[in-house]
Image 1 (cartoon, rainbow, N blue to C red):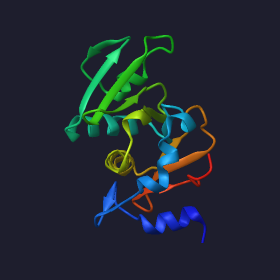
Image 2: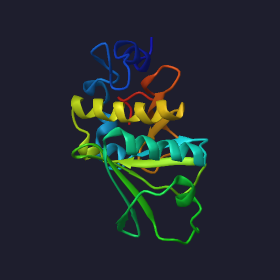
Image 3: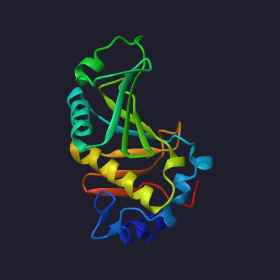
Length: 181
């Protein structure tokens, strides 16, 4: 049995934890959370999305109890509909939707295209088992709402996923061997 499959079998869970067992064990995945190996801001994405999917994420953020801040060109304001955000001209000011699932853990969404939802997380904020569980829970919440995989790759390396929320498994799974960087 391969290393990734062994970890998957050992750490099966449900959105961070299932039956008290975490999706991912810190000691097994710490390399994927090393900013020197992965870059401080790994890329997280949901492919094959639509305006309706973005709206579902906006609705999740509003209803979740998470702290959030929407800004255009650095100026904070109310969160409009996804259709309004995505219809903006290509040369318009940058949109950021900052979401804190818990204090000191930030995800930054940048709505640029209906076809893909992407956001960054800061690995410096995600050290240790508790923080990995928070990340897994956040990925699971987004993935469950959309019914789609939420995939994380090293910063700037969209071709090689390292972990993902898998809707079929209903949990975060490894996509690569964390011992290999």
